[in-house]
Image (tube, rainbow, N blue to C red):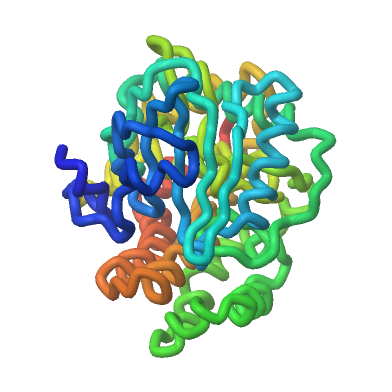
Length: 351
């Protein structure tokens, strides 16, 4: 893969939205530096970097997307998890400038097995699914006692404030208006009609479970690419960029949606072996409320996809990707009303 290509919204590689990190640029962050590898992840620029004091992982964010205050929220949660025994690599420093903010991390232990796998591709084995389910449940247990409030409106966060409201249309109205980039991106779309027709019927199944879904901080993006591995075992937990105060079951629902359904195929298929693995891993640590999980799953991606829509429309200016993010909100939800989606939800409800 060329260092100037990154993952797109599908399987193809595309030109990056953000310029790749260079050794000259990194000199102002970590001193003398050699770039060993550039990450193909698309929402920031990141690289594995060699310095005289050892290797580090550096990520550069546009301040319009992530500034030092936003990173402090993520780093505080990471420090809490690390103190509780979750192998989250330490943050070694944050350097802020007029346009960019850099975060420097220790290199985690293990192999970056999914470094070239797009985020919507399923996991490669049921054994990996078991490990992902287990570590997400361990994160849920370790998050106990981290009582920071939910994050303020930010781009590219797996939030929960609207979907967890008993009145979804009103809550989503507030969610949109609190995010000017999102409000502008939706201004020429009949999104309120789609909410009423697509999301509200699904939310009616979730509403009875809301009182039992306790608030807690969650990882928000437990994909295989955000973990390091030794064979089938997770050895490090990476990238808390999407974390927020949500509810533990949202992490399991998100993992099932992103890693056990082949969304990048023309006709998405459910990988039953991966569903079984994720459920088995989670339930080896925590119990599963099957009916609540089934009700939550079709709505798990809604708030993050809306945030992606704002990012693509308002930050990178990609109308194509903005359309795809909009489709992820509503077309994914519609899929759960079809035969394959209904079969998956019925199966989860029997957990």
